[in-house]
Length: 621
Image 1 (tube, rainbow, N blue to C red):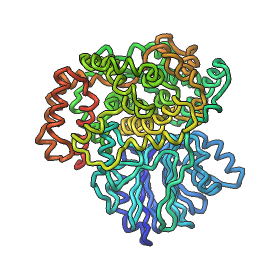
Image 2 (image 1 turned 60 degrees about the vertical axis):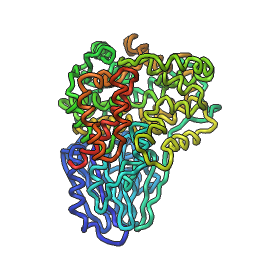
Image 3 (image 1 turned 90 degrees about the horizontal axis):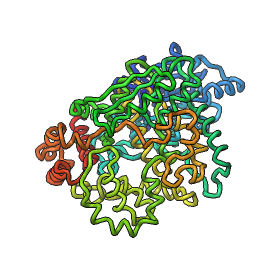
Image 4 (image 1 turned 135 degrees about the vertical axis):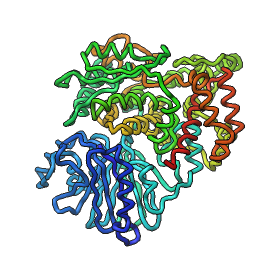
């Protein structure tokens, strides 16, 4: 795991002119790679890397190169099948200086050209400089586990693992992108290819960016995980599918445990993280280290389920009951995330990562299980909505008057969302249930976007025409919510503590089966993640297998009506908002008042606005 960055001149100049900027960019990535630093300048290209040493501790410092140094590479990530690739390359005559995975990338590119990325299993953001061709190749894994951002103008192209480093690239402009801001207000995160800055873009998952001999950069897709047509779903009986899924998950967990340093598991008490602990315990040579976090609010506390799993497998377990100084933590999160990020589960993820980093350098985390196997309440609601359109419309006036709740599973919040979207077409309905601010409210808040960020969801949805209806909605979540929210959260929160987080559900072998499952194996009647639960039922306590959805989340609705309310009103004060010029103060004040009165649960909206304003003021630091 590393942080990478680079600058390539497109105008015939030398990257040596930007050596100081390159070193400054690299220095900002020290949290991603505190163990070593390296850089190389070759004509128009300069590459740099900060390394967190996980495999081949003594010899894996980057950049690395092919035998004749014609191809140089820097990588952020872990290639799970690097040993098999290395053996094949040795058989083809390639010779290696190291035992790690990064050098394999240089030789694989020599052997297969731009086809190298499709052969990789793992998580990665890669930059390759092909000196003879004067070609830069950037590649990002098929799920978007590892980040990579870039900017380009007529003179140069720059890239980095995060925006904090990219901002130091020569000629970079800090102007905010109105469409990205609008997308943030809609989603509480910013979807690829957008970034908060108009000058920067995210490399989308499963894509290459290729720039040859000073020409225009071009994007090429090399992988696109997605559902097959409805006719091509897997037809086998449930028992056979469950056995195959358990075997594929076991293989993925074993592959993700490969490291020359200690590995732990972030244990939330739910079926996904419990599965990782169970399977890791089968293959590990010593007790698995597990880390959990809880809250005093009983509806948010998941330690009981986590303890059941830890006790069953005799793990070396650590836990923390959070009595947060949420004010200080929000300010720390604003610095850790390099653009606005409003998902409140970032807070407990940040803290459990801090706990884990005190003992290990690598953890396994359960992201991806819900998107791949059908774990969200919205998937059940999507099945019910066509049958309940008329009752929902009749019930709407009554549901809207329900009092707001501060519980984690807020029935009034879910009921209000359901009746608001039940009569819409499938994609619009699905989006309405997840939306933070409606288009009308975004306009009132001051959005100046000229297009709708939900067009990105429509484009993704249109790519799966012919697939089964529920699978199409899961695919939207896989390509956007997972990639641009959950994986961003896990990457930033863990790397803030120089901790590598690996996600075994986001594995091409696991996803290949998950995406081809029939609907009955994903959502059966009102049961979510049906096949996954059946596959791991022999491995986990019944309360965990059949329990409600769990994860690292925080009781922010209560906080914002209680101890955090003065802080929120200060940060979102009219004077502060006028100074920043991003949000309309009167509209924000109304949101604060409605939430404080208990008439509505607006905690998700207010947390997002807090994150935005704190991020804005953190950019000078």
